[in-house]
Length: 223
Image 1 (cartoon, rainbow, N blue to C red):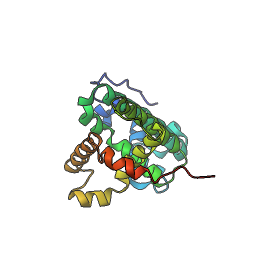
Image 2 (image 1 turned 90 degrees about the horizontal axis):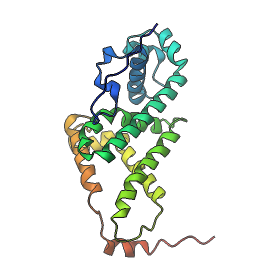
Image 3 (image 1 turned 180 degrees about the vertical axis):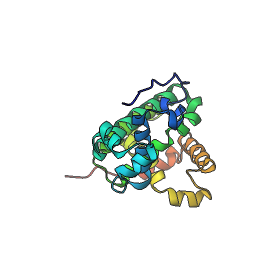
Image 4 (image 1 turned 30 degrees about the vertical axis):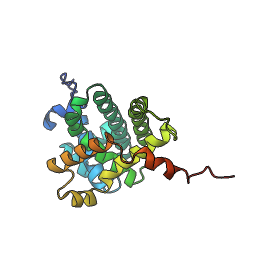
């Protein structure tokens, strides 16, 4: 029988309680989930195997099936967990921007998992993307409050595009890493990506004098 341990309270900057605990000290169920996140993100759902995940988790395939039933059940559990952790991370950064670096570091595996799931056209990843769009809307709402002009495009549409662009970064990791001159998943590369995104998000790429005439050619289609 597996003994479930209640994680100790952790600082607010950590969005993932169990990730502050050594892997070997996690419950068997949690180790299986962490191993699955790693294999699904690295190998993709189809190539990841129950046996390989169980080996990484240090458990038997039988115990994995006992906890999750099947590989599909394990993926569903990972999806729910990732979504919950992303919600936590987003809420923490909204309330405490200074925790961004710590939260980003703890949340990095989730971005890789979502990106790989989207690339593999996972049938279960759609709700995660939709929730990411909803969370992005909260950031755009803040930005819209300080705008001097009225947005010309619905906030949901803008949030969907911002979300897609951000998720696309890890999907193109080989090319991004080449442009950076270092592995974007390594410490130096991750720092460069984080700082570059903050700089991009905090500054206007084109001013209104350029955007207004450029938008004039996009008339609503006639039906």
